[in-house]
Length: 119
Image (cartoon, rainbow, N blue to C red; front, side, top):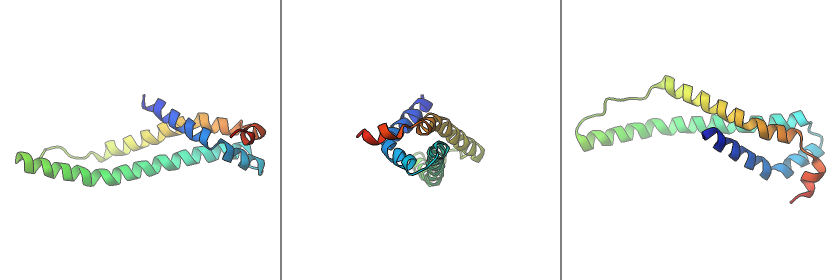
């Protein structure tokens, strides 16, 4: 389900940027260059999202844990497992990379004339 959402989001991004990619192709960017541009952009967004999620997750977790100890008088006995967090981040980037393959292939197969003409 999440993979499908990721794929749909990336495909919509590709459709919105189709004219821009066609302009880059018209200026001489190779099909492989367009495909790698789409993949690198997707991976950069995924890595940035993981970093921001981890950076925001630690303080929020501690804040909720402190609130729970104030509300119930007992500090919850659970904590953050860094190994699971790293594994989840790696899996999220892998899913994003897999989701970026169809838009990257579409960018490589882009017909410049039709993409620039369409508005």
